[in-house]
Length: 347
Ligand SMILES: [Ca+2]
Ligand SMILES: [Ca+2]
Image (cartoon, rainbow, N blue to C red):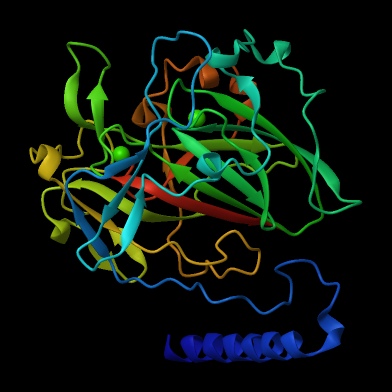
């Protein structure tokens, strides 16, 4: 075992030396992203930031559904000051709020009244191709994110979810890229109670307030790439918590192992209401880049349709063929992890 470990270390050193040299010499220019170039550090300070209570709303709503729909929640944005003085935007700083990037093309969206009955009715012909690499292959992808995604390919913003919170929508993307390429998603389980990670569920007078929502991402691309546990997924905002000590850092894993379970109905629902805590971590610089070093990040967890609670979600269930072979993914706690970055390098 020791010898094996030494051998691995020696190989690792050799690679590190090669990479370091590569960064300095012209011979590495023109290489594909992530191939032979020195990786950026993961830049992650694992120093947690703790908040308590509700954030101050800074934007009332970043999205208005043009028609009346059954499940509509307001996509508000807030700010809250952590105990160390850091001002944190919740549920996240997003491209949607800043109006950046190409807005997503609908696969299914009640607000835009695009609701094909099945996969055979779906046309990808009018989906614009976002060019990452001239002369690359054109890849088509289908995406469902509960609730919000923004997607980067080799650091370029390619698609921004046009419906940040609800109703549940799904999207089609097309991009032109050369391999290897890196997909990076910023994912948000949006808050109704900003900073607390809770909402009223279901909506209406009989709804239960202070209900922790849950997340999820599933995507399938025409080159065979699918979301699964080969992706990396890191969480940056964990709430609602009765006590910040409920978050346990194990290496680079931001875990919540003692809260009953990682999915509904097992995940504990604390009774702290608007006094609940949240634990945040700084979003690392350059997380979208193919050079960003995610090697120490935890693998994504896979979840079933039942765990995600999507068996009744037409944006997804109408198109089983389009998501065949893909798994729902998230970081380790589907309920409490509200801001997640997921990455995958396709070789
Ligand atoms: Ca959405
Ligand atoms: Ca949640």
